[in-house]
Image (cartoon, rainbow, N blue to C red; front, side):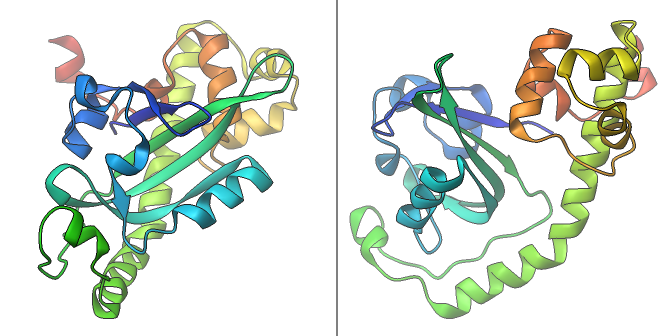
Length: 219
C-alpha cells in the first residue's frame, strides 16, 4: 500500500512531499514545498485545531477522514501525524502519513469552488455518510494493514539474516513484541517503524508496500 509522506516544519510549512502525496492531493512537489499546509488541503469538519492540540499533548494523531486536495478533489483516507524530534529531544517538525482507503467512494454535496467552498459548511448528512462508510471498512482496513506490515517485516528481517531475538535486542524490546508484530496481532508504532527502517536499512514505506506475487517478483 502506497503512503503519502509529508514533512512539515514547526510552522506547518511543507518541507518534503513524496510522489504518493502528489498523487493523492494533486499538488506537485514543486507546488507544495514551501507552502503552509492549510493552503494545500483541508479535511471534512476541518478539525485542524483539535488535531494540533492532540499533537502537542501526545506527540501523535491518527484517524480516518475525507481530505480535499487541489481543486477540492475529495478522497477518503487514513492519516497519521507524528512529532519529529532532534537528538536532544526538541521538537523540530512533523511528519504526516496518509493512505488511501480503497473501495470507499466519497460523495459530498456540490459547493462553490475555491475559497467559497472551504468556507461553506459541510452538511451533517455528508458527514454521517462518510462516517458510516468509514466504520464499515475501518476494522478490515486495520487488519489488512497489520497483515501487510507483518508480512513485510518478516520478509525483510529474514533477508537480513536476523532472528526475532536479534531484532528485539537491537530494538531493546522483548522478543514477544517482534513476534506479535509478525503475526499481525499488533502494529508497530510510527516510532518503531522509524527504528526498524534504520536497523533493517529500508525506507519506512517498505513496511506498508503490498507484497508482490511470485510472477511479479520473477519479472
